Image (cartoon, rainbow, N blue to C red):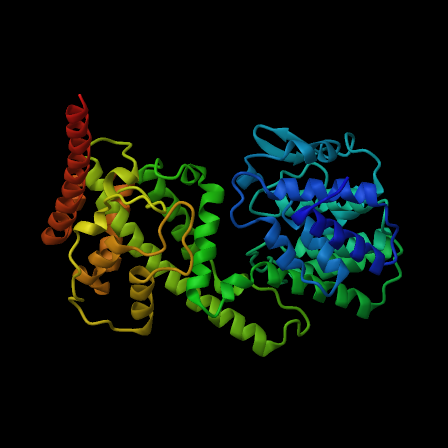
Length: 461
């Protein structure tokens, strides 16, 4: 078959990498693998973990990194709402579903499969293990498919190196009870695998395999250390609809649905320690580069947390006001629809004053967040505008000093500890009055638009 676009690019990566590694090339079979990879990466809820992402993560220098990247996000249970039908058949001999959880089959059920045993050894996963979406489930299953797919073309020792790269992409792992990092534990397992499978790696070669894995894993999360916090937020906004699927229903997702997606992301960033984002092993990367990655990550997380906190305050006010209409009100009802090219509709921001800042900014962080709210992130997303006019109006009115207390009240409202009206009573009355008046003016503009239609109809009649 003749492949085009992303599938051809994927096939070219497979062929050139296998050739560089001295493997066996079988074009028809590799075409099938390329089609499988790209079809899966085009899943309907893939906004960030796409085919473009796997090409970026793999780079173009090291064939093992290129191959590992092609497969590393193939399974993403939370995003795809399960395992793609096209790849599930390759996993069924090794994994089963028990009470809505994926579990590695017991030893008596597992086939005598050397490639599976090798991948499981790289991950340190034993028979009967319950797989967790947050502790290597997706990466392990992706590595199993990589191993079984590449088995006809490459030696087992090379596939072990590919699996090690995929294992290293399991994100945000703390130091183990023994005091070792996840990457140090991977090194220990590779030393044992080298012995058990008789690969003949020297100590230096084993260390280089781990360093390569670190390079790939760090490229996978490099957006956390983006020198521009707006780029980091763009990626954050691409990640949200992957696990909040109602956001893909543009103009019909509810106020509460949008709020829940913000809550999930804000909760995750509050939990995340910058030191857990990037890997570090034997001067890969060097100490200065690693320290800079951590420092930039810390700054980006601080910007994102404050930004998301203000967005949550904003959506809390809109949700509380929407309760006066009902319980599942679309956000577009309160704010207007996302504007489509060539189609002018009224939106809430049209009815908000361009207010001056009431309280002086106290830090570079506050200045940067206000700019992100007022001017916007770098990119529009399919489900949201890039700037935040309502949040900008609110923060200019109440100032940053009040955000922490205000956010706590918003969280009490979300949790049902206080009523919507009780929450609104904590807010500055002029802010609530201006926003509710803006929503009513938005309703009036719709009423007038409908009136024009009725008038035109009567004239024609």
